[in-house]
Amino acid sequence: MLLLQVSEGGTFALAAELTKRGLAHREPVLKRSQNGDTDEADALFSLLEWEESGHLLPHALLQRALREAGNQPLYITHPEGACKLMHRYWRLSRTERPLADYVFPFLEANPHEVHVLLELCSPNASVNGGPRYRAGLEESTVEMLATSLGPKLYEMARQLHGPEPVDHYPGDPHDSTPPTPEDRLRQFIYLYEQRNKPSISEEVIEE
Amino acid sequence: MFDPGSGPHRLTTKELTSHQHIAASTHFGRYFAYTVLAGDVSDQDFAAYTSMPYAEQLRVTKGLIGQLGMNTFLQKISLRSAGLDSEQAASLWQVVSTISPDLSLEASGGVFIQPNSEVTQASLLMLQLLGCLAKS
Image (cartoon, rainbow over the protein chains, first blue to last red):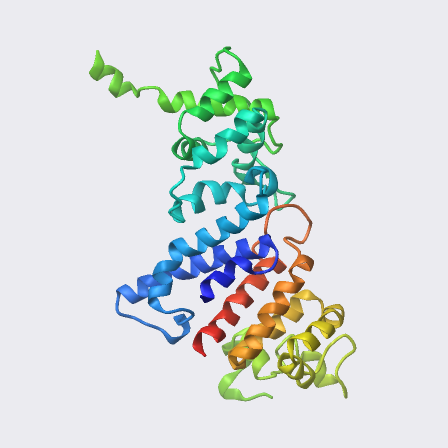
């Protein structure tokens, strides 16, 4: 099947870009077909293939990455694409195995790799077109991690950090230098705890 | 060359190049030279390249990239993609796959793929080539 060639397109970086572009190309094609508007230029694949591509493309790329990773975690072997593979393509590919079942055995064997995982999932930033770096964690990133991995990542982060309270966001999220691994860990703990705090309106209702 | 009905301001870069228009950056210099410029490859030679068998294509690819630069090399294939048959498209797909370790992710190095990187350009070209395969 032509679609599956996408995941074997040369280097992993090229295959990942090809998958991303293929998925981006898919959305307008499906939208136009829903409106009864078919364009010859869209006929890269049949409509059925386009519909299937939503999970087949991520699935094929994820399988390639897992095959290449062997006994190592994706966040070590494929750092440039690990976040998207684990938090987006894992879900899109309809993989039955929960992501947590894959990730936590690696993290339990090497708890300090929590720092690696948090850094790879941090947003990219650049100042005035300068070199890119991994900025501080944002609420949306913590939400993504909590949704994909559940509370266990927070528990591991807490074990690494210790019981001291984290009562403010360490550093400035708009700072032009990347946070230290320790600050990023504290950012995660702070934002996770804020996320789980009841809102003011909920507190009023409980009272 | 200067058809008033289709002035260069009305045409896309792709159309300018495919019409071999003087306003196309790939052809501008040629209108002022008696030969193909040093560092360029004639359209006939490039058309012959796209028709070569895979093994021969692969043999001359490095030389072409060295002569044209990666961006122009990928652009020249892309501009011809509409006229490729499935065999030519499959062969060029393999060529781009094979040279992919040489594709840069961004201009200034690093791990983030930039929007106009060679990897992005190659991936868009490969989608075009898949289109040629799908239509056959």
